[in-house]
Length: 549
Ligand code: TNX
Image: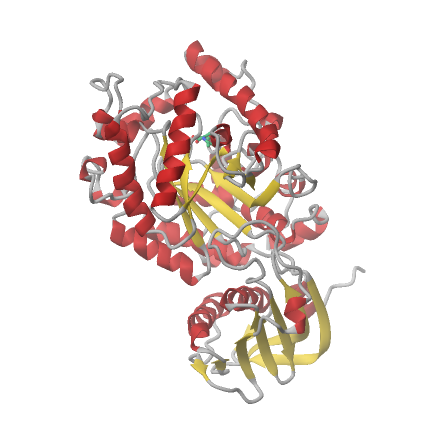
């Protein structure tokens, strides 16, 4: 007979990402309906209210309304104490914070004993992350009318990497604000702290710019973010201590902007399709004509300033992403000039620039932040049927760019860039799953993902070594960001099918930043996520290698 772990033991083994240290204490504490939630300072009322809401959503248990003050026995008590010995014993994260705050801010301790629960954070962010662990533990335990009986524990935790994100392509598929909030909830659940929104591309421009109404004029108002809606999203993320990094992709990937503002180029724009749908359809059919913003045109710089002024004003975080990738066909010198100048403009608007890997080519101060994406490990096969459908000059441009950018990745060392790790082979979630399944999931599996990437198994996706996390890459690492590109995605269900279960697996790699844990162990923790995904109506890939709960 195999030993069945007691519920408390099993629940402790299902927390994802796995905490750095958890020790069992003596006894238990029962969270009951109305258990007081007391905060030491007012700035913890927000995290406390969210905790009460999250716990109710996952377990049905309604605790008391959070209040400030001191607590007697039998309460959940939240405090900030950066000097708490349990907190300071947790190593500070390495890398770069997208918010610009201190790298130790997310550290916390969580103590459960017969007298109550106490979460102590190095900051309110740390308190929020600790409360995430408390919810993760409670949801794995039986909930009765009397409440949820928690095992006594002492946990101390904090992330190993400061920047842990997801890049979401909201261009190729239009998502509503409510759908993006559900993605933010997933990031929150798995303790990711950056939502990088890819807001513009060849196919569409999805952010209202009041100085440039033409950018969104031909669109259904539901298909782009008005500034009011965008501000709400940023605030929703901020309440969960998640920073939104907006990306305006320039100077390539700009056909939507060029269509609306033909003065940005000297190329012929007369025959460009007007609608996002038609641009996407043509793109998917292999009809691609590279266009770019020309740095020699004064109109380009008034456009860039109009856009950056509003984007910066909408961004409480430290970074604005300038894209900079795949400027196919653009003279290399123009690309470098453009990048150097756009970085300056971002700084003039009070933000720091980050760009895709290709931006490392532009001369800049040491410490420029770049996002690595090209991965020689996943170089496209020129004989791939999709590539062979494209016009030969387009294939040539793609392969040339891949070759150059692999060299750029190496140059990051010399340039002393700080790198967000998003190498395609590990970080891209628009990759097909390799394991066959049944029914509707199989239809999705075959349809979703970029056709040129070889499929991979969930085990591989979550456990294969990640350059820069499992080894020393020779450059400074800001952190890790997964990316989901949505050319193949029709709706939010398709999106969550690509995210789950891989995103939680990668979130754990970023949180712990060591080699992957044993697959058997991770497999069990992924399986235990299914009830929550069901509760929240998420679609996921039901990998046969996982015994879904
Ligand atoms: C490359 S990654 C792109 C995107 C595509 C993606 C597909 C990057 C900076 N550019 O435009 O959507 O590949 O995986």
